Image 1: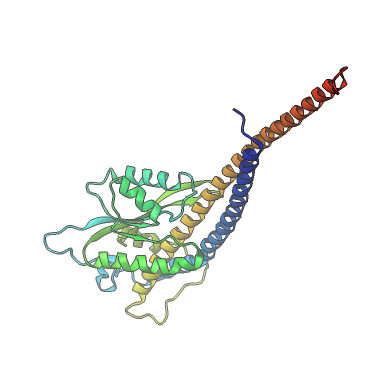
Image 2: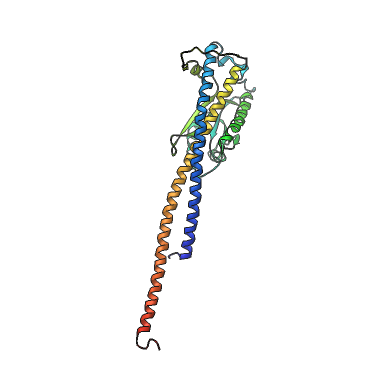
Length: 307
């Protein structure tokens, strides 16, 4: 049964309102992508400075690597008696929806990776949506952090995460600490990425010890204090997580932009179909009225039709 003209008109209005909302969300997602991409890009120079600082320190202290720096917080204290250190994983997801399979694909990769581990790790989640997906997969996060909705919210978030990691690290609850996220390949595509954060062992130190110096001038570390290495490491950890968070947020908004583009296309197709139905119904009504007028005219034109 065909829909009535008032019903079709109402559906056209709803489709138009949805289209306006989708256009707004698409514009907001595009702006957010730029915002988070710029934040990650702006961090590159500072991250490079931190890496060169670590390289300089290890060059000047070849015999005092991370394996001997317990006093500076790089090596965790022994786990409490009778307990064993668990691995720990920080998962960057989303608080909001309309991102397609962003969280689902992330959890699928995480579950596949954790299936190879001898025991489940301690998990921290960034974003309520990823929390629910992890719980459904059988991994309940020990703590959930809110996903940042702006670049200004990233620094306080990372400070809270590092505080949580430090507590678990120093308390013996966590050993190796890793983090994972989706990072953007383009504005519509992203890939899964897994990185190790702690411990900072000899392999990590060797990476910086052999880092090429960018100029021919011999560097020198001045005004060194006993806490210099700890300060460099603190900045390294902060930069690593800040960059991961910004990349995840950019990928999230890229996924949302792609979802909004698909929704916009579907709405436009639906509007086209509804408009055609409306036009057919309206033309049908006009034809019926014309037929009624013609029939009435013919009836009145017959002899005795006016009687």
